[in-house]
Length: 205
Image (tube, rainbow, N blue to C red; front, side, top):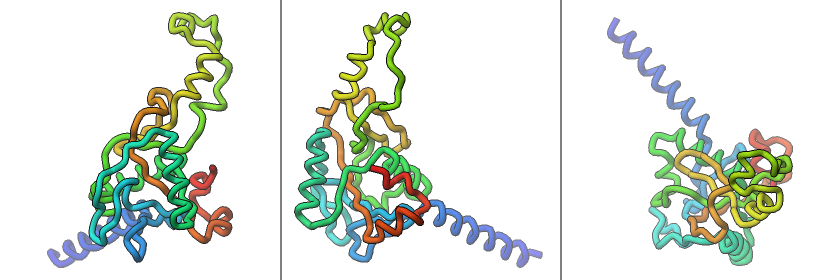
């Protein structure tokens, strides 16, 4: 009876581990420098900008960049190694945060020594589909909010994602705020992945 109980427990444990692995499809590349999300067809830089992979961990000091500087960091890296590096969209960062939370260690083994908190995203607008602000609404009137200054807010503020929670905001961090930057690039199977990927939204830029 005890043997049967041990066998059942072992099967349950193996099943749970398999489900956990399936729900968090983040694998480390052969050279250790990137983390691969095969379902999305993307590779994440294992170290944030300013840090480098030593073969064991990320060393150096993370760069805290403005939104404009974050875009420049992506452009500089594209020129440096020819990879399709880019500042990830909100959807990609939120998916990464979710996948990391599904791991037992919260993703620390995949992304060692990563700064906590908010990271810049490449999404451009606060909400391009938002309706025109009703300037006669009491709440908007009391805050001095109208269509003109709402559009100005969209210009001044940039999208960012809290990697601890997956929360995305585009209405409270000015583009001049300094945040960590984690870049991503498409895998070589980009064309095939656009058709077959299980996470096509991540590739919409």
